[in-house]
Length: 186
Image 1: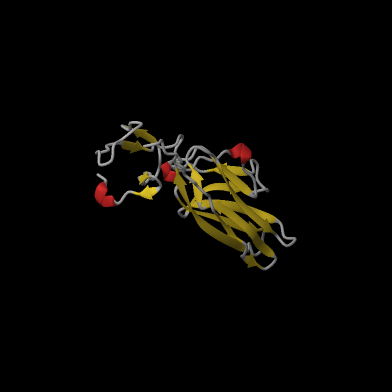
Image 2: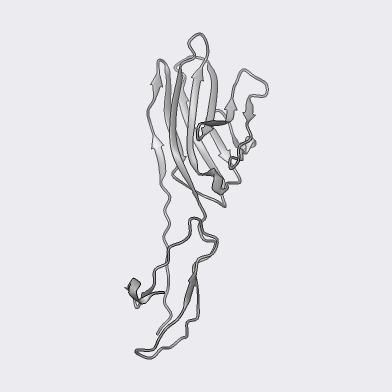
C-alpha cells in the first residue's frame, strides 16, 4: 500500500455584532472570536460612538463577572480584576480592546462589553458573545504501526494519535481515499 497523505483544514469564525444604542451612545461593533487557540493571544474588540457625550467607562465581563475596566477620568485608567482563566495583557488593552494571554481551558465562556457615558444619566449599552478555547494540534497526526506494503486480505493494525488537542481530536481512517467503516475499526 502506498503511503497516504493526511490533511486537516481548520477555520476560525468570528462572532460579529453591529448593533446596540442608547440615546447618543452607540455600540458600533463587537468582535469576539467564536474559537480561540489555546497557544495564542486573543484580542476582544468593542467599538462605540459616544455621540458627543463624555465616556464614563468601558467594562468587560466573563460569565457576568467583571475582569477589566477602562475609566478615562481615573488614574490609572485601567483596572484588572483577578479571575481564573482570564489573563489580561494590560499593555495591549485600551478603551476599545482587551488582549488576553495566556489562554487556558478556563478562558471558555461568555464575554460582554459594557459601555457607559457620563452623568447625569449614565446611559449604558451592552453586547456579548461566546468564545470557546481550543488547542490546535502542534503537528499533524502521528501514525504508528504501518508497513510499506500489505497483501490483499492481510490484517492491518495501526495507531493514529493527535497530540495536545482540546477538545480531543476526532480521528477518521481512510484507505485509498475510502472511509473505513466504524465496524472495521477498534
